[in-house]
Image 1: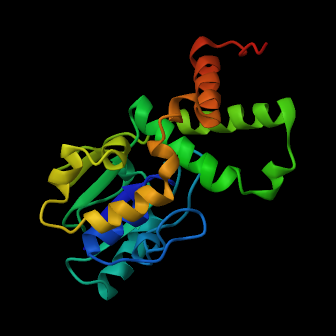
Image 2: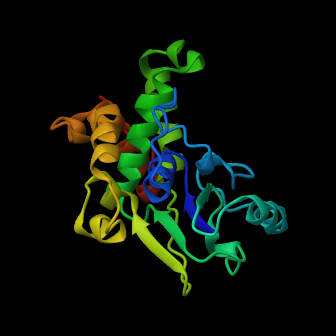
Length: 219
């Protein structure tokens, strides 16, 4: 059995479909509704899920080994740095160490969740700006690489941009129709206006406040 580790909104469903060579339906939240991509989940967090009891995951993984085929891939939100990965043949970790990966992740979350959520729709003006800026700070926290003989780390941005790194990782697999659909669902990531968009502005403001340790000044 193989494992994909990813933080929310970083292509867990897409990758699970690609590596299992399935084609699941689109999920309401803008993701891919792959059953296998939820089998290893024991929880999540607003940022990176690295505070959990690893024995809870171990028990679940042991159960999954009895029902999953050797070559199947399952996914989890757990950060792999504190997991016992010896029971898995291969592990892929989708990292968000770069500014680009963090921005892509936050932008997906913004458009697929925050623009559709009732509590957010009820907020406007400066209160809305403040809420967006503070929430985007969660996405500044990186999903860090993990070292191990059976682990492959790949940046989320490499998947979004279908880079050489991503194409090497998926050599021999049919990725074209998966990526075509995913790019249509997430068309805003490929817009020329991305770097002038609302989520980008909020992300910059959050990054500025965090790194400079002072409030962002609006006109």
